Image 1: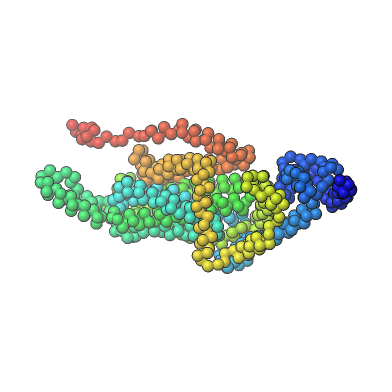
Image 2: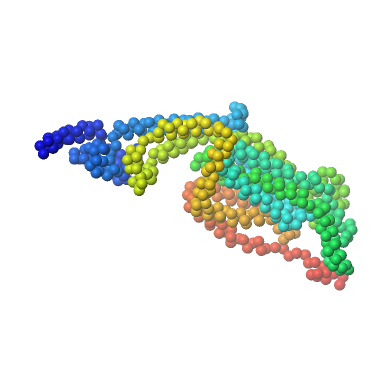
Length: 567
């Protein structure tokens, strides 16, 4: 008993000695979010003389591990080591970004191309790309549907299948292009997409080059047996033989499988070429302009997606006034065999717009591919993002909250990243883009299932995607056959219908995109308010939908719907 009493002064002296090396935690360190080691959300209670013990002594006395204090000197050393390692990683990341901010292709990055590394040139070239896509897909193709039907003797259902191949190409390559392209050079992928768009446009016009000259009266010179739908004076066996021969004859007509195949392949390439534009292009803009200007630049970008079709309809309306074979037939022969534009069998120069669009697209392929992966103007923003990411990694994780199966001591006294982990991270940064081909493919492919699962389980994103799909269902169908709808319902020539769509309908959609982008930026609308605005505008457009029921009465058919004038 006496020995135990004699040890009490020693314990008091030992506790005071330990406390002289352990500083008290101030009020500013009470918040657990700012502590280097995880702590409680509540404030740390003030220590009295009875609790002035080291962290090990507190743990042995049964003090809750959340309130255990770590020696300040050890914490400062570990914080300093962690910060130095993070600064080294950030500097290596920035050195890589500085190299990627140079303009060029691959290792060819001359200084004379540095003028392309600005936001103005970036948005100009991407708007060029967007306008070409709108001109070809949403302008020239819908305007040429009726002309292609007459020129190659195709049905409307066949043209509908040809139009669908654009969506097939887009859907099949959307996920691979957006995933792999986002992990590599986005400008290079955008340039490749525009090159495919140019090649597809040129391929779309090749059926005109391969077909014979068109004559509107070539099928009316003689009345053959195949032109009679229901021959009345032949037997059933003869009817079957005649039907088989007529089917074989149709295979030799201009509207054969080879031309349909070329149209489908060309439009399929259009879909592949447009894939990086609306997936990688939008993210490329968002990464290089910052949050303040992102809505404005994206609004300008999508405005050209609407003005492009307007230019396509106007261009098609101009070219459809010329005969499809104007370049090698004299005007007298054209007027003799095909009449003029008012003739229902008239076929204009539908192919000329695709050739011109292909040349315009090729002009911008090299400049877009030479854009830097990271604009020099956005390097400061990228540094701030890296700093914020490194600071966020110091926040508390689920292991710090005392969950079941958690090593509390490791969670409480978690060290800075080990030397091996830091070395591996630095090595991955410095050796980025190196290694065998199979290793690069594995690094790209291994995260695809996880990424798809996260997207599919994101309910807000999936609902917005479903809404856009339904909206595209209406817009795509209306835009593809709107020109033919005006021709049939209002007896408008093909060139005039294209002018009406290009001058009235499409520009209004572009103005709506620009105004909506300005409203979002000016009033600084958040995500929920922006969605409410979109729902309100869509409901207003739904009210105007019955206007499609308006039409002009057709001329009565003499002998069927009305009597002859002389009777």
